[in-house]
Length: 227
Image 1 (cartoon, helix red, strand yellow):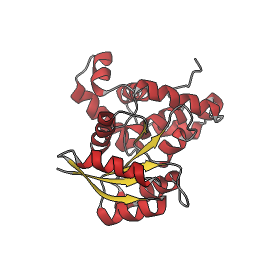
Image 2 (cartoon, helix red, strand yellow):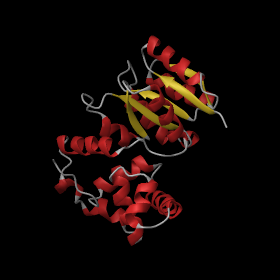
Image 3 (cartoon, one colour):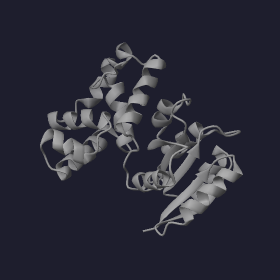
Image 4 (cartoon, rainbow, N blue to C red):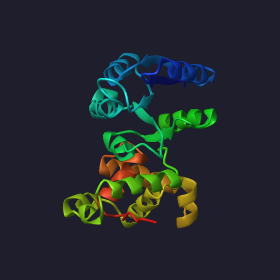
């Protein structure tokens, strides 16, 4: 199956570079280009994109607003958004994930990393390595989302539907670990981990693993630590 990719960035030169890269792969194609968020939402519907590479800073409707609109539209339930950002200077990582993005990627990433990110997002996986997750938690702290806020009973109550094992797996997911890594840590098979992850997503109404990470911290299941 060919992965249908939509490019959303206000820099035409950057879109052109991404198009050449994506179209060079036999399993993916660029189906449209948008210079702002509103156009990205419209084209996602028009072209039935599988993955949107979304810049945050665009004129008019920015990438965050566009991501929220895509995530909230039932007709676009299968669309995955990958935010293109710069970890060291970008203050919008948490908002991106809360808006419904499947993950984030640095604009300075290697071509293979970008292509892998598209494939991961299309498969429903999250682009959250342990290093990226550490940055995510740091931003929770910087924005004042500390332990007191995260201990809100209304937030933690949403985990009541999970089994003990599903909670254990969720803690590992929040650490940015892959299914294989979690399987090794919990001494179970990767298929068993995948089953627990899918069940947790269904019970918590999460679109993907990235949303599970947000829920794990918002509910207080995992506490941020400042290193």
